[in-house]
Length: 239
Image 1 (cartoon, rainbow, N blue to C red):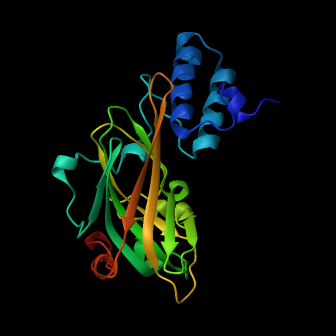
Image 2: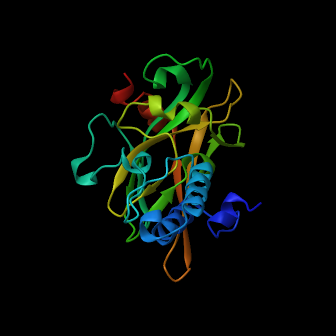
C-alpha cells in the first residue's frame, strides 16, 4: 500500500509548501469533474489532510486552506496590540520579537478553559514576508532559545492541539506566508530550569526559489537585561 507521500508523488522530507504545490497539481489532474477517478481523488485528499493536518481545499485554482491564511494581514495596516519590539531585517523576513515572557501559564494564552497547568517561556513574533515568493514559517522547529546558563532549548509543540483557542489575531502553528503579508505568531519554549531565563532567541528561515536554489537566513535576538524587562509582558490581545 502506497504511503501518503507516495500518493502525492513526494519524498518523506517534503516541506509543507511542497505538499501544497503537489496537491494543487493533482487536484486539477484527478478531479472527478475533469474526468478523473473519484477513488484516486479521495486518496489524494486523505493524503493531503494526513500530512498537513488541514482540511483539503475543494476549490479549483489551488487556493491555500483557510487555516493557513486566516491570521495573516497587510503589514501596512498592522494589527493593534503589538508592543515594544526588537527587529531583525533580512531578504526573506522582517522579523520582530514583540514579547518574551519568561514564565507564562499556558492556559492564560487561550480563549476559554483549557487544562494546561504548565508554565513556560513564550516568544511572540510579528513576521513580515519580504521575499518575492511565499515562505514557510516553521516557528516551533526553527526557533531556539539560549538560556542564561548557556544551554540551547528548542521550541515545544504543547499549544498545537489548542491553537484554535488563541486570540484570532495570533497563530500558533506553521503556515505558508505569501509575499508582503504578515502574521503575529508565538513559540513556546521547552522547559527551562527554575533559575534560568532566556537570554537569546534564534530563528532560521529557509526558502527555495524556482531554480532549486536554497537561501537560509538566521535571525538572532540578543535579549539584554533592559530589553528583557521591557519585553516581559503579554501583548494586549492576551490581556
